[in-house]
Amino acid sequence: MENQVQIAFTWENETFQGLIEKEYENSYLIHVQNPNDELVEKYNGRIVISKKKCITDILL
Image (cartoon, rainbow, N blue to C red; front, side, top):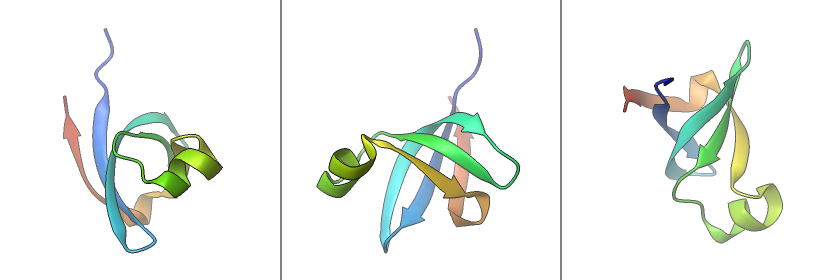
């Protein structure tokens, strides 16, 4: 079984946590665990975030 990586990131002056679904060269596709209404409505709870915006990553 593959380890999932939990990550915290900042988007529009709010901090969120999520699991990395896919890694790109300079960004991650993240399934957000604590999405706000805008993330759910516009992005369906998933968002691509620059690696520079990531605060920390933790192995589960």
